[in-house]
Image (cartoon, rainbow, N blue to C red; front, side, top):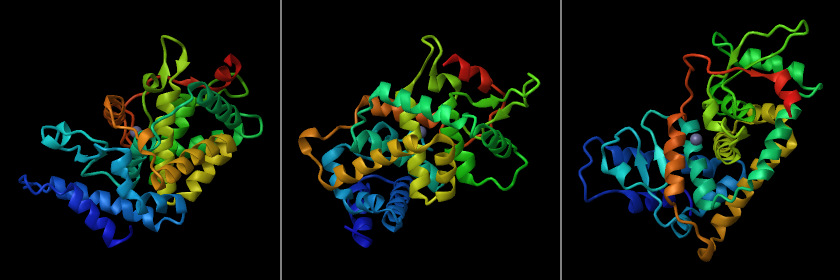
Amino acid sequence: MQGKEIDEYIKRKYERTDEKDPLEVNQGAIAKLIDLLHLHENCSDVRFQNIAKNIQNLEKLVPNFAIFETQKYDSSYLINFGAYTLSQKSNSLVDAHEFGHMVVHGINGFELREEEYTGVIQRAKAHCISDEKKAEFREYMDYLTNRENGERTEAEKGPLADILSSVFQYPSLAFVNPDGTNSRVMVFPSSHSREYYFDVNNGKMKANIIFDEDFANYYALALNGCTRELGILRNFLGDEWMQTMENELDKASRIIQEPNIDKASTIDAKLSSALLTAREGELPKELPSIERVGQIENEREER
Ligand SMILES: [Zn+2]
């Protein structure tokens, strides 16, 4: 399927002709999904093209896939929860992020090997603050967290910042200066809370949540052609982290081409709660205050 065929397929499948839609909520959601699928089609990466081309297989993989609008919490669209959230005010980075959650849960069935990804994150963090990278990382953090800095792209302020914050599981970082004092507190322009990424009671990172958000953020960057930002992530987090994301995308591209109905996942309560939780911290936002500060030097020794 391609081009207009996709548009017609989506409209035929999701248009609610039996309901009044005075605020054009349903129409708006459909238009957004269509735009997003065109972004897949026009992406130079063939794996994204495959996802758009084989979009009709989504119903085999995710039988109760539905789109709904998040701006109207009292509407039936939210009650008929399916898989994919859209917001009237969101941009294509955020739309792609939400779709990325659907890919990892709905298409790939969310098979996370918790320990494995915990290791990936630990090594990505170690790479970032290795003797070789640390000075460069600190300099980049200065650039990224300076609110006056007009050079930062939306992709840096949104998905890239959230990925870096997830690797450290802190919404802000401070560096230890050579004289033992701390640097200024650098607050990521977007992030989730400490508790979202880290189980404080058990002293463990929540690798499943981090993987879910990291992939959604990676998906947003890759689909939107943010090669510069992906290069920055590869430089700081290393090849292994990037390869883990790439593998997940490979998997989605393969599965949607040849859906195995026996193995087909259904969007269940687990995904529902993952999406609803994720949405709270979804949009790039300026943090009002510093929750906690990750001490880079100390954390490194703790490991
Ligand atoms: Zn998310």
